[in-house]
Image 1: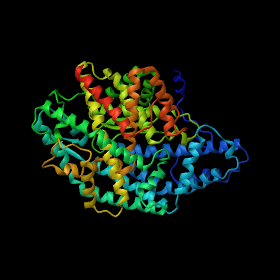
Image 2: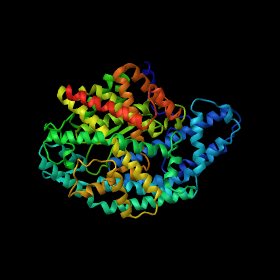
Image 3: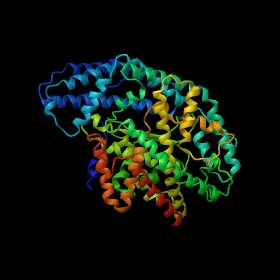
Image 4: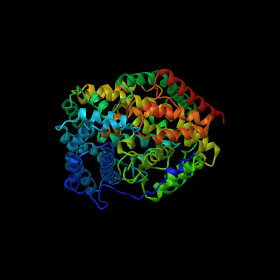
Length: 577
């Protein structure tokens, strides 16, 4: 498998823009947009050069705004960081949008476009045609306002802390106490976390109303009845429909909920409780202390590099590059935005991993997940155009979720004790089965939200309670803590910051399970297929990319049933090990 050749010099090289170009205002960029717009294109070769120059400009812009977002996320208390990001989205980006639309139209109208049949061009062109179709001048300022408001969620959530044992800690850090063997302690911390979240429930509800209003207006301006239909176009969902999403919801409800019920019944029996409460869901049912796979960022990176290298030297080198270039911020702390992400950086080709680690198994899963994204970013860094590197979420999440399961075969890098390794695998596999219903619930909720644009806060609360009831079991009692369910959607940052980006996790999870199943049978061949699929970037449709990975892009009930049954079998194997 000759993939080492993809590792190249990471020094930034520019052929169109000056190397010293610094973006502080729109006027720094305007001459290049004007030149691209006015340039004569008299041959296919000149069109290719025009595309290359435009791609370089967009790569520089993407990396510039990425760093503004990353810095703001790492420190939400730093006013200059938020001002820098907000300046870009409110002042620079609104000037870029009209030019991008004109450049798209210039490309589509070129007489030489038909002479270019390069791999990936048909995928890029279908996306550009859709962008032209939905672009509206009046939405430019609305998008600027929307992006600024979306960041308010990070500020609100980043300020959430509780005091445990006399120490002020983030909610991510506090969640570790939910793995304590002392049940009274778990309940106490659960109540603290819930109370802190509910303290901001009105503010978060108000913020969401503001976001909904802007999003609905954007959809109306673009000629859509609702924001759901607009986003299906904006996200470029060419390869599946809303009806496929409905099938996914139904299949998960029918096939996964019975398995989740079995998991909860087994947990209740192992713990010896008459009633399972929400603070009982993370503790090890054997009564053993919570797993601690690492201590701190340095050890996490060291063990992750070792884990990836055990799979393949190239994969390890990818994580080593991130470490060497200081492209990671992993530890949880006050004032840091919640969540985790891998942010591609299209000019340098080396992404940035952000997360909120508190030394838990969940954090191990997060780093290998984001590491899968990072590998994907590096494998696509040398593709010709930005559009080829910008993969749809259904593919991007296959890279990350596939890495979760493939890397699990090398988790002995984190756990010396075979019994701890067995526990870790069991917990992760069970979390996959329990997470798919949450993914389906969030997606179904989004369909309801945006196809009922005039709803009230009370309507939204009722709708969520009705939807989440379809994807949970009665084995967990929330009596006395009903608000923990009623407002649980507010902790999902995707609803606030990246609407409709969530079902992709479910689709990709199915693909990842199929990938892992293949890996168990034939590790070398599966890893080669996985890497070959990632190297495609977005030069093929989703189905073709999945096929290259040796799996199907499918979310039918029968497929979900087969894969869920396989995971269940693997969980049972761990129990017998």
